[in-house]
Image (cartoon, rainbow over all chains, first blue to last red; front, side, top):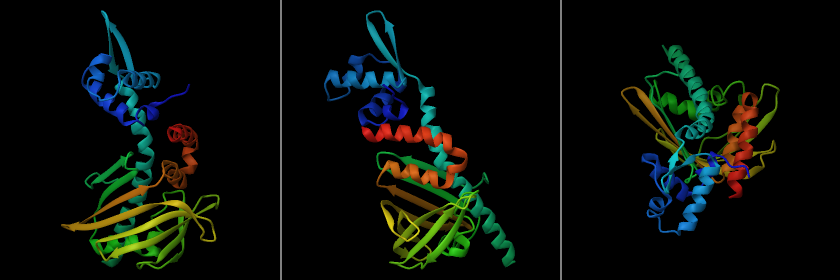
Length: 106
Length: 166
């Protein structure tokens, strides 16, 4: 199964989970307490997030804690950058053009 | 890019909307013209190395702009923009769709909303682009970016397919 960061953030519950554990590592139970869905459905989301390598598990005594691999989020930023770049280039061209027009008017 | 000029770019994925705000060091009428007159528009609209070529443009409500992005190899990608609302020097809206060379649009398209305002000689342009589909957003990238980004796009295609299957 091939999963990636975009699959991780495609679901609103998963985005909420990401926001939750961005602050601190949490146990599955503590995470589930924040949602109205079943434990199973939260577990499923956690599994997908783990497969996307956005979160990692850590055993502490009898509890499993989930925490965020925040570096992975950079991939989203890189993806967005492509759009941003088009507009940057386009608008820089407009900057230059406006400057030229201004000079011609003088 | 000039650092003293505002440039904000946000993608709201759930809303399928891209927001772009940019300031220009020029007075509003000049910037408005740059967006609404074909001879000026064609000089900056296409990110290099592509160029923009407008075949038809009548800037009025119900009017249209039919233009192509031309690649360095001469490959043409046509698009059709239908102006749905115009408030001179303030705002205009259009529906944008890719098209073939005979002006047949490929729907769905995107809805563009552009607002202009001026403050102390600087003009701010805020654009919002609502896309019916993510797939289309990907195509938008491809139009201006094919050359250097082919590899990235192949990856992108894959991940969008994954995303859309959901």
